[in-house]
Amino acid sequence: MNAHFLLAETDNFKIVAIAVGLLVLLVGALFVFKYFNLWIQCVTTNAKIGFIDLIGMSLRKINPRVIVQSKIAGTQAGLTLETKELEAHYLAGGHVTNVVRALIAADRANLPLDFRVATGIDLAGRDILDAVHMYVKPQVINCPDPTVSGVEYLDAVAMDGIRMMIKARVTVRADLKRLVGGATEETIIARVGQGIVSAIGSAVTYKEVLRNPDNISKVVLDGGLDAQTAFEIVSIDIADVSVAGMKDAANVGALLEAERAETDKKMRQAEAEGRRAMAVAAEQEMRALLEENRAKVVEAEAQIPQAIAGAFRDGNLGVMDYYNLRNVQADTDMRNSIGGDGADSDSGPEGGS
Figure (tube, rainbow, N blue to C red):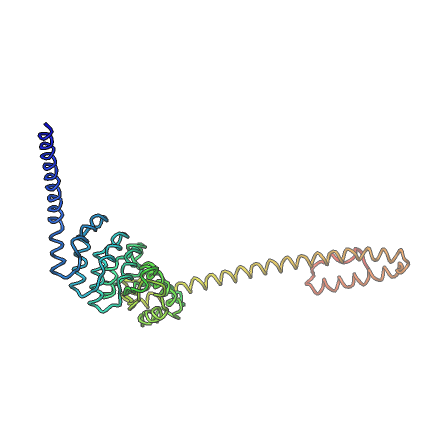
């Protein structure tokens, strides 16, 4: 009975061992089937990624295909890339494929870009591959940008008061050293727009701007507007410049002269109206002053009888002196009446002789 039990137990153990072995072989076959193709690619391209490394990537939740393809591409391009650095960048949330492509493009263009700088730019949120492409092939930016500001032209005024409309195109190249922390395209557009408006405002006349628009570009370009930005300004070109409101006019000068003449006419009329108003005000002031002086004369004349009465009271004037004074006044009124073409005078005493 015991022998029969031991035999049955041995058979069960063998069955379990065979099942476990088959399970191990099945898992191994799955691993081999899953990673064998990638491992063969690494061996044939000298990428130096082992089979165990591929399994470890899966355990670390890293996509082995991304690491293998990126390292193969870099190795075939002549770059020296460490597998652990690629894995670390993948785990940090970086775009490994973009970084490797950017390194290859930079190497072909003889750009000084190493792996640490490229991964730092990528982790900072910049598209490193697009930045390398922009360095190799500079980008043209419209100033102003209608898609951002909704305005197609810059508005500036020269020293002679003529309003001008200008559109510029700025050619920029990415600066790989300043991509992290450097200002974006919006800053370039704002600075260039400010520089153009300032340069036109310094022009004596609008004719200087129309005659030599490249001078505006030179002044703006010499201002170092790309400082602390992620770009290097290659050139600033004035694409379009015109006088405001006269874009389609055939003879801008004649129209401006006509408008200037009309403006001068209105100014002269306003000045003449101002002078007339001042003259009327001065006339009114003089009339008021005349009436004031007349009132003073009347007031002074009204004080004469009072003075005479006071002289009588004080004994300084006698009766005969008073009558002599009245005679003199009557004689004076008569002479004034004769000299005034017989006009009656009301100033003489009644019945004087």
